[in-house]
Image 1: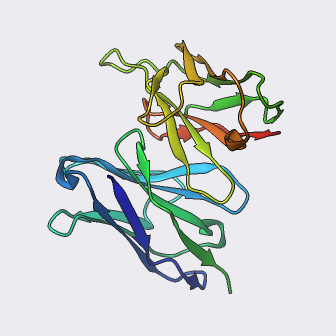
Image 2 (image 1 turned 90 degrees about the vertical axis):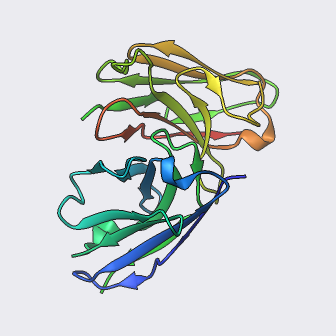
Length: 115
Length: 111
């Protein structure tokens, strides 16, 4: 059974940094593309970033390009999202999702950017 | 960016009756490999999203067969043959063909 467990969400001031983690199990992590998808309170879904399974390609939404960095440690089956220069509009639940087509999701971790 | 437009945004339904949601994309979702990467997700209240349908019409494992997807090119439909109480929630279409990936606005289904 695929399991994705996110952590690292917190209340952070504007301009601050935070690193989210997603520990994966139940599938071959090394071969899988992995994504971060966020959902602002009461809003819809936005794909923030995707990391290809071959470890070569990364993609970012324009809203986070230059501020967020996606990375992965295949030895730990873990996906990361380093978030810098955070803005209030980054406030959201951040989900880790498996695959280019998001076939499995974690439970999410809440990031609140506020002074 | 590819804009995904869902209708309706609010869908009152009756238990045991059919329901359908439309999704339109601003560009064709046919990828260079010949596949059409249009997915449907269900988000029940207080839960994470769950994929129901991938590549237009393929049901994910464990998804009841009352859910079906259809369409091609830029026009797609999610149909529930007989609505059950557990189907309450928000439904999103999403395209997985173009970058950036985009979702529809969501359709809130209420009994």
